[in-house]
Length: 115
Length: 114
Image (cartoon, each protein chain N blue to C red):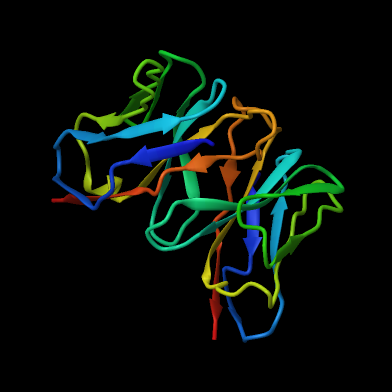
């Protein structure tokens, strides 16, 4: 079945540091890949997505490139801010026949940015 | 404003009671979903519905029930058969199935068993 593995936190960085959160996946077919962000006590917000190999998703300074050869979708940001502190989820949606519809999630990475 | 509205935000349930969580969307989306989130865990799919009057079990459907009588509404009932219901529940919707369609989430409901 489909699965997503992401680095587990917490990840603690200083403000303006470079961020990488690793995400790898296994899936049947041709999945789309997503990064969601969750602030304390809230639902999930879509951060960015990519629907095919070599696509780059970007939003609010965050980027991730869909790498089919390494089955990866690592999240990066060049200079993090305190307001980026949150839990980040990598997810895929394969839509493969015979399986449940919906997203398959990683366990989430708690990011803490210190001033 | 367009979006997904969940209510209540906080709910307490006594042992042996059924409770229903509401989810309404005004995005005109065909597909709707319920996920459960436990601390330190990813989200797990409970039920989903791709069209009115039809729904399917997800990975952890035991102890839960749903209905989809209207396109905009997908309530979740947590029954007394659910052994460990304390969790954060998230409703979501999508314009349709298929990998390219984004799934959007509501703000969530906290359920605590007392």
